[in-house]
Length: 270
Length: 290
Image 1: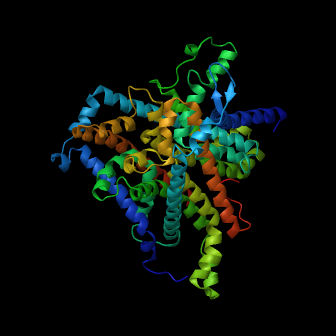
Image 2 (image 1 turned 90 degrees about the vertical axis):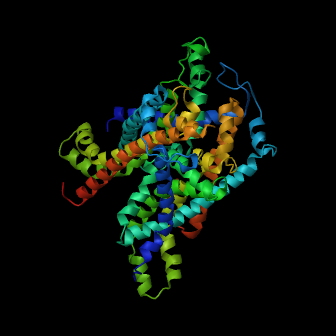
Image 3 (image 1 turned 30 degrees about the vertical axis):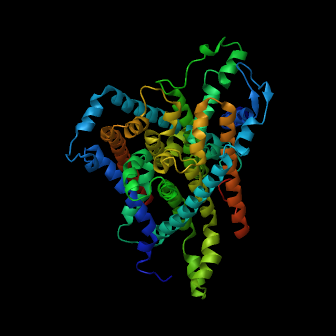
């Protein structure tokens, strides 16, 4: 590459980095702004009003954040479990209906969740799954599974079953094989798919709104009225807490994974 | 390894159950769109609601708007996503820390992205303030209205912010592989950088690009959040209009909601068919034959 091309490349990369980072920096500043009137480029004064609104206790935001994180963790756990099972069957077995299962794994990506949600709502009401956390977990799972299955299928196919067979020949019990071989080898995939399922569940708004019916209050549901309200300080604070809590959960995922697998590094964030 | 005969069926049991719920939900919605709602005393199969959707100008406008938003945002995202991926590959940043920048927009939810667009592109947003301080505009009203307008610029901008990195992330691995193997070969044989891109890298990445395009097209067609937060009052995007009809106090509006959903469903059905043909083309290529 010539020097000119290198400079242009650098420049374009900087433009991209700014496009990603500037909005985040702007809401960071807004979260702490007390007054930021037109046409100022920087706030006139700062305050902790936005942060206090969330951490102050009276808004109930912290409880909602906590229960929302737990809900999404449950979805992530189930999605990884089901994703791993389905991936194993798709990679290691030939069975009747395999193509149907393959089709089933992509449908929820392509068919809009709004179509699904309004169609299934009446049935959920009849079976007592509407307006409660169980129903919300089910619909979140349906949205998240296509992604976890894709990731787990790739990882399972790359890893194969040769090591497991060797261990079995050498007399390891199924539990030992699972603990010593399968789990550590699949761990990078498990972490990425857990992150993916977590974020899909945590950022879900419409599905939770319609199936949860106002009874299941997630952080995303709580946040939307503030985003519409025009109070940018509060809206920014909520957005910031949303992003930071997600990153924190991902870091915890990776730290936990590293305790099991010391040389693994191929997780969601490099 | 000992293979237990029923193992694959047991392993697929939870997915099969959830898929069943999914399919029953879709079928139930479709039946309602054809006027079959026993709970409301409607028993007759009819195309009436579809016919009315296409004859009511406001609902037809919703259909046009949704198609426009999805097509515009997905095409632009595919083009710029490929260019971004190319930029990262050519500057040697296809792996490592720079890739985290590509992942950030993927983890930020649409509702927050909508708020980003409001803080930056509204008439008292950051961009208007910068233009004012540079003397390019003299009042808030001079800044073009980009949000809540029927050209849907705000919605498209928000989709682009999320989808360009998504496309790049989707194609970057294969693009990096191709350019380090076949791309190098082409260059050794005397091809210029652009020739290599046009005639070697791009055609080989095309299946992944098409794949990514279909996913974001289908998603943006049926997504509620961005048109709800950034859309104009009239016309409303299909999912928003459908939800309004769905929650209408007069329950006889429900079939209209389902007909709007039905339209989204049939468009996505076309996408599923395209997707499957794409998948089969890929397997044929991998197996050696054309």
